[in-house]
Amino acid sequence: QSALTQPASASGSPGQSITISCTGSNSNIRLYNYVSWYQHHPGEAPKLILYDVSDRPSGVSYRFSGSKSGNTASLTISGLQAEDEADYYCSSYTSNNNTLVFGGGTRLTVL
Amino acid sequence: EVQLVESGGGLVQPGGSLRLSCAASGFTVSSNYMSWVRQAPGKGLECVSVLYSGDDTFYADSVKGRFTISRDNSKNTMYLQMNGLSAEDSAVYYCVRVGVTYYFHYWGQGTLVTVSS
Image (cartoon, rainbow over the protein chains, first blue to last red):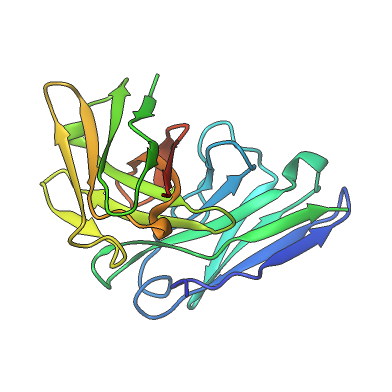
């Protein structure tokens, strides 16, 4: 059981926008702005796409954006492209053991 | 350029031990938070251990008492000593540099650990 809850799957058509949620608790997402998101294509290393809730590392497409409200963080991908098909994970710092936890992951299918 | 290269994975029998290494370049391991993250077959990502720059450490409950994270500053290398391995420890293990606001920034390519008789 992951400390952060994500939907197991999501799907959208090319060009559409999609939002993936990540629900935590008072010990992680609600308490800190230390939420990050990762894109993972099978067989490759995961890639950081957002950190500090909504900041994008250099080189990450503007189509990826993030937000937070209460104990839920969200990743929005706009203008879906075939290459966006991947697994997406959220992560947050947690006051439980003062460390980092992941969500269970969301498999995004581009129809 | 930041690079992380893992080694030391392989096939080991249940109850056995392995030591994973992560050779870093482009930055100083001792000045950064470092972590081992694993992904078991068909499962999600799990933060196994974190080594903070002040030598504080974190271990997931699933490995506490069996795994030890450490670094050799002279070699700019991080390690994960894994003892008492079981099938549940079979996974790809990634070496990761952690950002100052607690995000998994740079990832190695991973090393596969298989625990099987």
